[in-house]
Amino acid sequence: MKKFGLLLAGGLAAVILLKTIGPIIGLLVSLAILYFIYKQFLKAESTGWKIGLIIIGLIVLSATIHHIPALIGVGAAYVLFLVYKQWNKNKKPPVNKESDPFVNFDKQWNKLKKY
Image 1 (tube, helix red, strand yellow):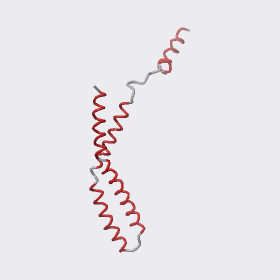
Image 2 (image 1 turned 45 degrees about the horizontal axis):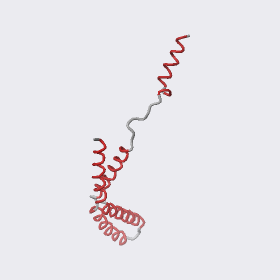
Image 3 (image 1 turned 120 degrees about the horizontal axis):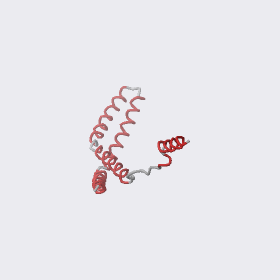
């Protein structure tokens, strides 16, 4: 039953991710352009060029805000990662009782008590 739930969650996350891959790319491109505009704004010395960069930056910022629903796709990618990680996880790792320090201590203590 747990595998079915993981399969259902993974399938839903994959569909959402595929549906929002375009807006994710648009968000990344607009954020990169906005970053370069900001860097150019810090380098600019003339007031006219700074005003022009502010206007261009506001236009690109509106495009970035338009792609905010792409964050749902990023969340779906994270859910898909968690499903993949949970699917491949072993139920319980084998415990080596011989290397357990408490068991070894008890064995040694019993040997010392015999003498």
